Image (cartoon, rainbow, N blue to C red; front, side, top):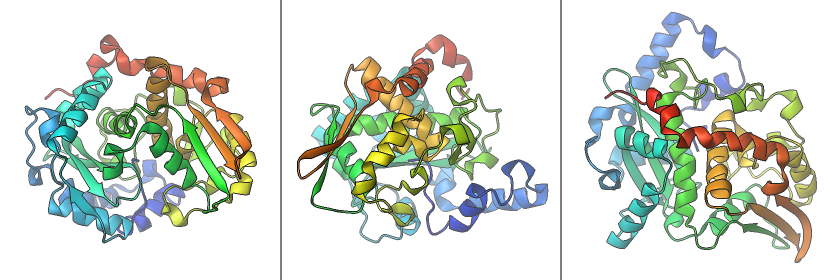
Length: 349
């Protein structure tokens, strides 16, 4: 997840997301004040981290600094977040999964990931936040729910989808991706893509606040062109019924949907160009989900199927493989695997 409207940022975030003022027409004086305020946030300051760009990424898997944990608690209004230090066997597994990421992800993590943290009771599965050096270059840290160390992909994605709906014991969400592949690898693909996007600016911006510091002109990958009207609003032709009521993990005052609306919701998704419900949240999540699903379906040759049942009776079945318009889009993610295509965009350290 690249952006969540927490308690500290809700006023600024709502202004941006609702378009009350344009990111591209902010008065220079007001922009300077916003930038200065953001620079002063302790978790944004690279010098506050023990960051060595020459160290292996696995050595940056540590307990989150106190100021990061405090920020996360304030952001989500939670006090039960508990930092977790992975055990040696878990560190081996984390290192192995990092080594399996696309080449571009590994390069960006090596150059710009200041920390990888695990937190018990964390809201959601993952979160990526940006950090600045003294020259306003963007770095980032990633936070993962402890649960992704012990869950497989099926379990983690089932819980994510179930969080869209109000609890009802008569209904079940069943996801078929893999019982063997770890939830962590799915989340590294997804959150790692946010990190790449923050650093390389593959889109206009990754979240409304990072816009002020993403200096270079955006690439705006072809697969995104014409799809999004604004950060969280698709063009009319690509929107679908109930999309504006999709929430996850109880964020944004959710869940707002009843399971009985499953058929209408997924029928809308199947007529859209988005691979998952989560991808339809914003252009940032669209990119992160598209890369994750591309790798899972095209590189690992795994399925992505969702079955929703009521009292064991199938109410709706969704298969990404049969979603032609979405599959055509996510196949454009090959950019992330071609060194000759992305090498010219890597930051020069």
